[in-house]
Length: 383
Image (cartoon, rainbow, N blue to C red; front, side, top):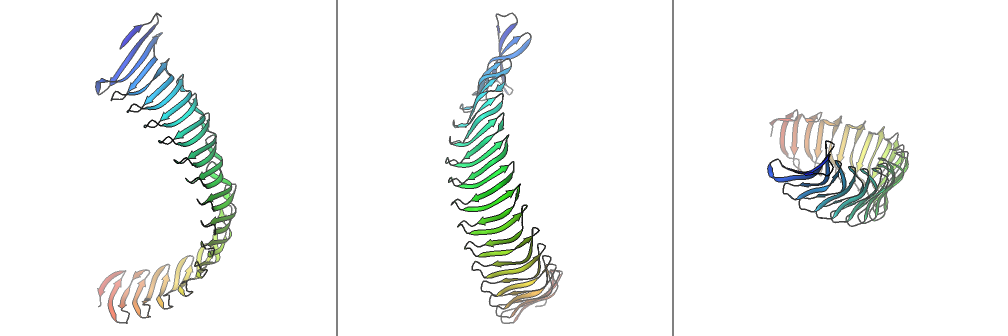
């Protein structure tokens, strides 16, 4: 420690050097102090070091507060940050740098609060984002950029809350999303786009709920979904389309639930599936068809659960399997067939578990195997 007497009888100045705890030969900091009226204050130059003894930070103290230009360094000696202080607060321009030396961000402070424009950069030096601050809060447009320089997003803020313009873009520069936002909720017209410029979705918010026509499109521009929303929920006719323009599915929503007859279709408009809903649950007889128009399966639903007799068919019209469901579980006698009509499996279930004699046949009707089950467990093989 060096002590220097001042010309003023009540003022002394000295420099204090501290060392790393685990090695007293390695300097951790060198700071100039002054003693005024029995108060010891940091006044003058200050230097801080890494354990490697490369400079970590340097600047000036005035009356125990950071003052003027302060510079922080990476361990490799390159500048990490340059900041200006007044009375211990950041005031004026502050710059930080990537370890490769390229600028990381720059902005202005007033009494430690960000004020005005701030710019953030990728490690390559390409601009990543611009912001505008007022008294430490985001106000105005924040704009983001891809590494190729194309715009990534535009979002307006009011006191750090998203407010108004909300746009996102593809890296190609084409618009991806165009909307208005208040905090985390959208309002007004909302649109999204495919990268080829075609509209992907378009609908509107009344307050913060989707209300009115709801339209979704395939990338080729043909309609994908056409519906109507009321207070954020589908209401009325609902249609989905294949990308060739033919209807895929059609039905009605009532009180947010599927209601009545619903049909689904193959891309050539041939009927694929047909059945009814009651209060959002499948109810009554449902049928599924092959694309040649022949029946594939049919059975009964009660409150969305398979009940009663179900039939399954091959594409040639022959029965594939038949049996009874109780509460969505196989129950009683079930038979499976080969496509030539011969029995393949003859078996029995009790509420989803194999129960009784299981018999297997080849395509010519010859017995292959026979065994007895209970509780889905094999008791013994008969053949």
